[in-house]
Length: 170
Figure: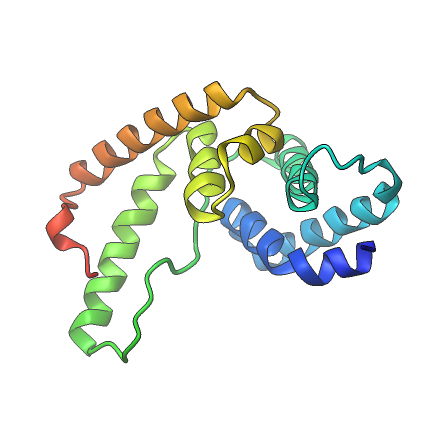
């Protein structure tokens, strides 16, 4: 498979991952382009030790972290809608969803960056523990422990904001 096919297959996933971290369309476009430029330049270095998606996300992760080290500290993330409906929501449901999303994203923003990364990769992008460990360059045990701690911290942040299981629209 060529880097052009990889671009077609993984562009949307990489774009949404980077956007969740930087929350700026122009910066996301630049970093996504830079990621795929690095993929094309280093295609010959892909050894097949992991899936191509994991390899590309590792490049996206390091490209984005380099941006933050150069430009500004990591302060925000998450701005993509997480909830979907099979029907058109009513005005009341839309208002409730907007309030819930605001609480949800605010709770996520309160977490330390390492917790944000592990939640994005494991729970939003749905990478396996092994893939997440390769992307973050840490052990699978650390990913598991970080995810457990991150979810507990996230739950506490949600509870601080008055968010409960009963307030979720399913």
